[in-house]
Length: 217
Image 1 (cartoon, rainbow, N blue to C red):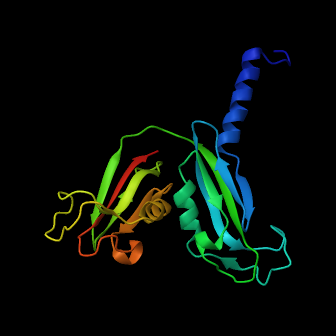
Image 2 (image 1 turned 45 degrees about the vertical axis):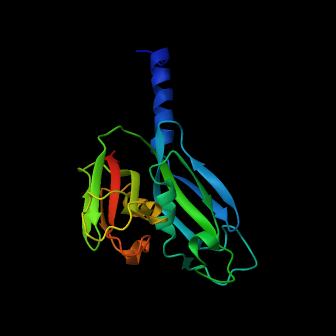
């Protein structure tokens, strides 16, 4: 054997490096309050969130004279960020109290995000339905995670969860897709309760349901 590498060996090493950069390396970013940015992966890869919050946990990210606390996270910020980004090729994030609420007044905050890019896999589309006042667990097989394609809380037909209390079939809670994605996207299992206390009541007096279409990747 000699110490030189063949062209094939060099090419294979190059392709391996590209794969590792796209799937293994952990990336992080911060968006200072009032700012916005787009998070993206290469074609054929999707965002896999490891950590996310809106608030503040140190003095060094987005430095400011207005820091009264460094122990501050908006309680639903991870769910909302996951709902917008997890499993997508790209997403746009705005660091604003109007999106997440204000977890610490008079403290300059930021979005902090750690993620990696995961290769997509095509799978069979599955549908889960949860009638109002019930809950159910959506799950994938070991080694696979949920990729939400579409979801809502409301009613779009008369045959799903049939009831005499069906006054409309054009009814969806506006924030329900983001909330459901935040609960389920990128997880192996998630439990969802179909209830007005979580999603609001988009059509008073009509018996509603959660419907989620997903694949296991």
